[in-house]
Image 1 (cartoon, rainbow, N blue to C red):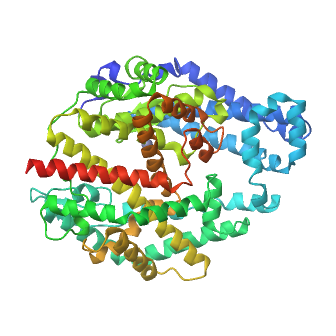
Image 2: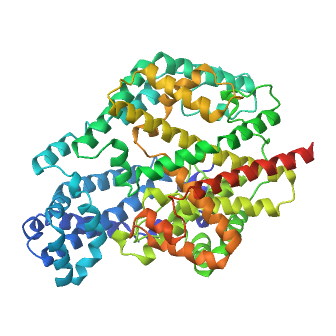
Image 3: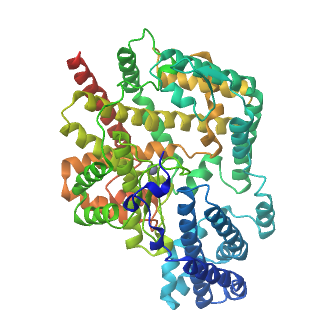
Amino acid sequence: MLERKEIEAKYKWDLSAIYKDEAAVEEDFSLCEKLISEFSRHEGEMLSSAEGLLSTMDDVTKISAKIEKLWCYSYLAFVVDTKNNKAQGLVARVRTLAARADSATWFVSPYILRLDGSTVSRWYEEQPRLKDYERMIEKTLREKPYTLSDECEKLMAKLSDCIDSHESIRGIFANSDLQFGKIKDENGKKVQLADTNYVMYLMSGDRGVRRSAFQTLYKTYEQFANTFGTLYSSYVKEQCTLAKMRGYKSSIVASTFRDEVTPVIYNNLIKSVRRSLPTIYDYYELKREVLGVDRLHMYDLYAPLVSECEREYSYDEAVSEVLDMAKVFGDEYYDTLKSGLTERGWVDVYPSVGKQGGAFSAGTPETEPYILLNYNGKFDDVSTLAHEAGHSMHSYFSRKNNLPHDSQYTIFVAEVASTVNELLLAHKKLSECESDNERLSILDGLMETYKGTLYRQTMFAEFERDMHAKAERGEPLTAEVISSHYKKLVCKYFGPKVVKDRQIAYEWMRIPHFYSAFYVYKYATCISAASAIVKRIETEGDAYVSKYIEFLKCGGKISPLDSLKVAGIDMSDPEVINGAIEDFAEAIRLFREIYGKKR
Ligand SMILES: [Zn+2]
């Protein structure tokens, strides 16, 4: 692996575009510290007049904008060189600053909650600029029915450190304390198995390696079933109790309320996916045929259908592939992305010593929407660039068309623009490329995405819903109850032909997302929305694209369901989910056709 200094400058972030030198960084630190130390003056004036509220909102948003910018700068410097002491120090300083800001501005939300609707409306008329904060104020006010007395809220805030600790306990236990033992890899070499490298062995072309990784991993998990059961049960009970305490009907109502969604959307997803289970059964049958095994086991599910594709893409080729795909979005999208990728240094491209793995898009209204890659020349990497470019362009349009504090779109729509790009790129390459092997490899990736994002996450969503409902009915959640329910869902979602190896009942123990209640369904709804958007772009062209761009411009200014409606997508319509399932079915059909022809 290369040292960072060996990589050409044009393939690295130039963070001096955020702060030109250290003095500029320090200037923002001082400015922010000054705003924080003077912030207490707002406590007395905030509710006294429209002016008082306005100046409080001005300062609180100024503080958070500065902290975001400082965070972005120091975090980006850190992730490309995680051993860099200076960057580590800067990250720590920004964390401390953010904690100070939190405690100095503690009263803003509780005080907004003291306002009534008529006062707020009158103040909007008295001081029209206050309207700039309307969305922020309304979002706080909608929590009013679920807010406790000041005394109780203070108590809750004090407890917040110990509430919410289940996820970190699970993580430390599974990733540091548990010893999973060793397995033999493809070359017969003994290697240490960990939760973090487990999936890599499950993707092995060698069935023996896959089976041994599966059996070895779950042997350890099984021994600690009661600990995991108690931990998960206590988390679920905590979530249900917190929801009840605040006056929500249930924990699912509380979570979806915070997403500005409803349990109906959640349940519709499960219903639609359940109805389409024969499609995924068909996929597993295809997998069995191609792998050439009598019966497909749980440890065969990640095995690739196509041996790695020989086609490699240089990074410059990847950029032109992605830009070529982006032409469909019109001039502003295309030109902005082109200058971001080729002139304005959005992307940190190659892996290097000390650089964090993976990929992401990050930025603030005052910076470019940067992209981290660990580019390695495979089609997967081209697809990742398209994905992250989708995030960055969503941020670009959101930030350009909204005030900074309204520009952040929510998680419910966050993976839409990125997945649109991924799907469009896959479709485009499928129609262009001439090598059957490359087309099969793209289809394999596409089917894997639908399997992992649509079906698996929906199964998880159903599991969570059932576990929380059981807890709310007062039924005990023991390891046995949880495992047997999980196994039941696996039987349903994998169909009669796949062998449900006994150990799969313990899989829930290794899913960290179950400790962020009702989170994962958003992956499934996002890919469904994205698939519907792609279909309309491909069939309706420019007439539809302008609606899609309007959706990107919504940012966080309106609710996620309303912003999707701007793109003509109604998440309460089961057809949105069904469309994604059709796209999946088409990928299966096409794979069979090309694969059959090859043989
Ligand atoms: Zn993403």
